[in-house]
Length: 144
Image (cartoon, rainbow, N blue to C red; front, side, top):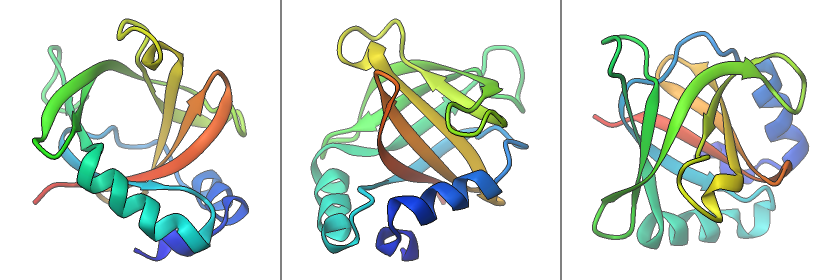
């Protein structure tokens, strides 16, 4: 994916240009992006193989709007680390964003906040924050 070769400034700009118009729903595939182009591909591959596969968005209230999420982790695609999904303001630019918080998941996940915006239909660009410090970018695409 071309985004693996972009630095933090370009990824932040792409995020800022994207919109929080459609909340994800269903199973997504994830790619973690460490905004250091030289090692980003190796980092993404390692994370994909051994740690994080993506997210599953669901709702108890509506078929069209997600209000909860669970991450797909490990080589065995285990469902773990639940979070809640809602619209709010981004920490980076104050504009609307899709927020995922893991407050009830215990340490260290209760200190994580994801922000996600739709870059193009079915493709989302996100930021992972830990204690209000941006640690990495990621993408989510609907699983086919």
